[in-house]
Length: 306
Image (cartoon, rainbow, N blue to C red; front, side, top):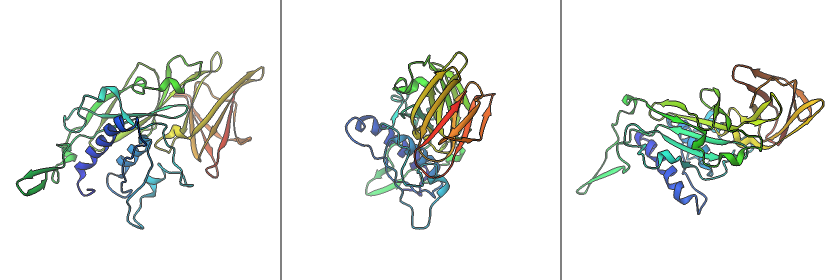
């Protein structure tokens, strides 16, 4: 029912809670959506965390490619998370659809990072879309003024991601780089710390949570992934490092193209992409290192030299 704004919120919550059970025994299906719909960004972000196939029900010629390009690579592949997206522990006995105060948090994993989505799914009024009155069925949410509802606040933490330690190296001490997709902010947090999040109805934020490795006395590093994709960390395929008398070399294999980001505690000497020196950006205030991956969607090798 794409013409009913409020049903969009309960749909995302329903598929996430269904995945909590079905994800143990089956490949989950989070359903289709329309890329040119007013809630398309909300739905696309959820699919990026779902660990599911992605498909749309667009009419021919009616597509929003700005949305689709954040979800699907030009070769048709997706940066699919490893598991079925599930609600975090602190969401399991809350009601993110009707209680007016709870956010929905969904976690998943990539090879070298976790991903945590936060969604404001309030405003549906009921998990059930219909009320029977005799033989008459009336949709109870047609006129719900979602834009008039206040924002909902909550907190996210690296420990919201159940299997985060699986993505960490043996040098991990518990600190994480946390990249916020919409705001572009990069934070460093101990794994038990938290960040406050406040969202309006039908708004979301996606956090890529990367365990930080220690690669030398003053060098801490973690790859984030493709910064313009919802599931940024899904682009990272491998991570290696070497230390010798000339310094430290960190080698990443990544899939796709576009702006690739990482957390680095210090500015590198140089960056190479497929053995060719590449220009890079480094922001010392938050440690964001970014380099552009050119060309096609093939696997690329990034070397960061210190």
